[in-house]
Image (cartoon, rainbow, N blue to C red; front, side):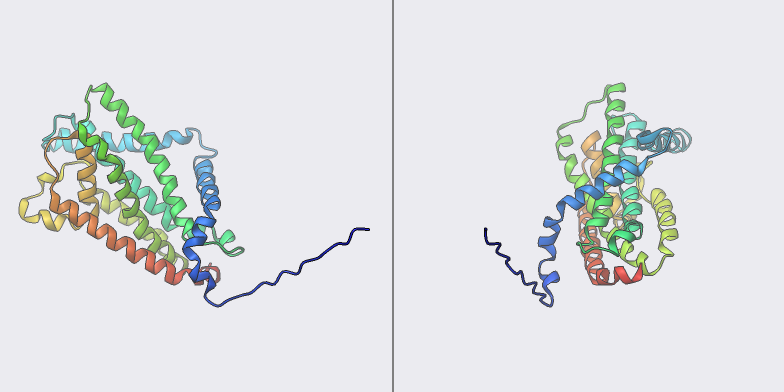
Length: 279
């Protein structure tokens, strides 16, 4: 008879071990990150008639309304060589990415309460996966921009190669506040009603339907305290070319985005331990 050898395994629980290995655990749970992101993409438009077409219809309708409102009725100037509709759509895309990512990330922890209350994993994965889902919508909508450029026979310049940089900035501009609000949302559920209100105001406070150079020069720096101003201007510049970027606005946007991301990350990590108890 063969002798069966049983090796005893000893589990050692060390105080603070989870904190020490937190960032390593994020990499270890990368498959969970992919699963959550894919699940949210799969169910986002489930049981809808149009399906993923909503990612195309919403920015198109917004572009149509803003083109009629600002381009035809208000007659706001367009200093680029591109048609006004392309100029507007180039502003709608980063704004739609930001607003969808912020809304989804803010509600992500509550939406995954069953998972968070049962197993351990770095909770940071949840809101980050939600922002990735908004990125998928952005990529779908971006195909319409390509179609518009082909329709109007408008070709971008060399600046187009810098476009991923501004997509990267939008990602972190939405993730930072999304982390903070998702943590607050576990304690104060009122924030689920506040976010749509903030997004609605931000749509008209950002240069989505118009170019920011219509803002008087003496108010330009103050207006640039909205971090989306420099990012949208940069995104539009990459596609349309034309006048150069207003660099102070871009630098302010990068700085505020970095501050918001750092603050959101710190607050999320501080409140993360209480998620399972609160939800």
